[in-house]
Image 1 (tube, rainbow, N blue to C red):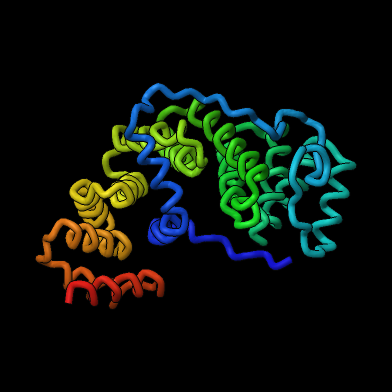
Image 2 (cartoon, one colour; image 1 turned 90 degrees about the horizontal axis):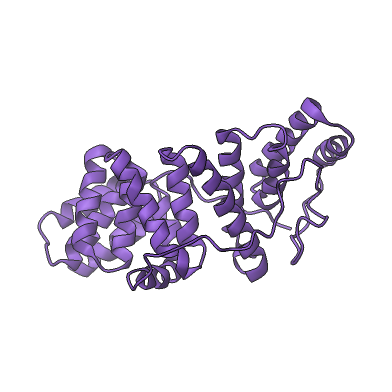
Length: 291
């Protein structure tokens, strides 16, 4: 089993993840603009994280579907064995070690399950946010994203945990941001509008939130609302002048709006300053298109 590298968590890496899932998200967002304003959260929660008992990933915590096995790791195996034998603070420390080890190996599928057990010891906002993020990262793993049952389980749990974060702290920008993404990425049309509105709420709290502004710009690109995208990416560059992804998509929006002024300068800067080879290739392609 080859354990894959995780996608970048930075804002600059975010567009490339969206490109990968763009076609699926586009369908959901287009559905969103129909009559989807009366949304409710009806999804069945398939993974039970409320028990204080230790649950191993090979047991009934995954009622359907199977996860790929972990690569051999004697230290990890020892921590798991000790965690099953201990309770209280000792178990919490062991669980945290297990989660950190699995996360470093990009095995968010197993890490999320062990992290959920740690909520019995620490159910603080940050602890629950970590659990929600791990389920969310797991749902993006290729072998889970391609398995309908597993994807639904992990996506639902991400939403479940992140909703609890927002219930606990309604103005927590990080919780709102990841919850909005979880709604949009859920492949459930009922959640599409809810995801966009959740991310928009961040800008009501903090108009200068770069992640929310950038994401809304990307959604505008995907739905062909290039005038809105242009304004979003201009705002991102005001706040974060070195964001080369925003610079590229600003140029892209200008091309789509037939506003060529400044496009070449934007793309030349991306080609000179961007670190991501895929982003640089996108810039080259667009430069060739306009020349």
